[in-house]
Length: 255
Ligand code: NDP
Image (cartoon, rainbow, N blue to C red; front, side, top):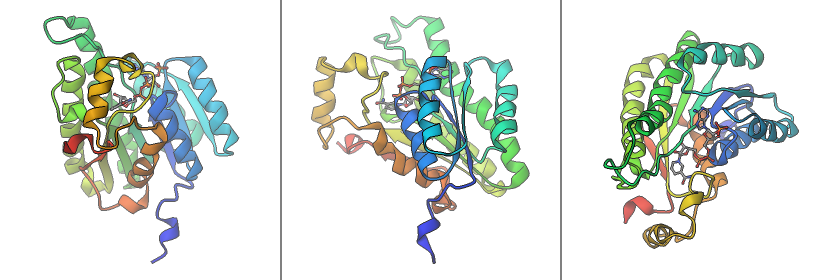
């Protein structure tokens, strides 16, 4: 068996939602380094352009699309346009996300709840449905959903986030069951605590201290440290792996 090609993504087309942010950018660049053509999706055109510049520097085909994934009516044409430019999608990473640090259900506004569920859960369902329709035609594909430690644990701070991330793991399993016969593997990654814009409000607060005490590695993760798991789940190395969640958390979940 030649193991050198197991993680090679040459010729694969990957779409990464939230690909202009901390974790998504790292995965996008990691996939390009492994040979993939990469499309990043995000709302902010400046952030999109910055990552696109880095992707182009790798020499791989790349594009960035300004899209709000909560705009349901725009998803099908957006993915169609990406596929027209780069080719049929082989890998979808549902990574885009927001959090409402409301402090609990008693203080969370219904609109904030809806925005989180729409971005972190409903869009995962809708985008996966569109990508899977293309993958089924070719009898191959990989869908990777980004969960969280709050896929497992409750959060008094961000209940909508925890509800969505818990559901994403169940959705991952359900899609894995449904799509296995079409040779589409659906898996999740549950990151521990990573330094990004999303977690910036927690830095230098008592919560940071609690997190560090609970994380056996006793430090924040760097987005680049998620790339190995993502490339594994995107590549032929994981062709018989489906419905699972890979924790990349410095041991947070075992304590
Ligand atoms: P960032 O805030 O750095 O990135 C979030 C990304 O999502 C940005 O690219 C943002 O781009 C995009 N995004 C948000 N809303 C939308 C939308 N409606 N439409 C399109 N794009 C959107 O955070 P992270 O990199 O930390 O988060 C990435 C994922 O990882 C999220 O799902 C998060 O929940 C998850 N996660 C993060 C952890 C951490 O410790 N950082 C831990 C566990 C999970 P733009 O603003 O341009 O739209």
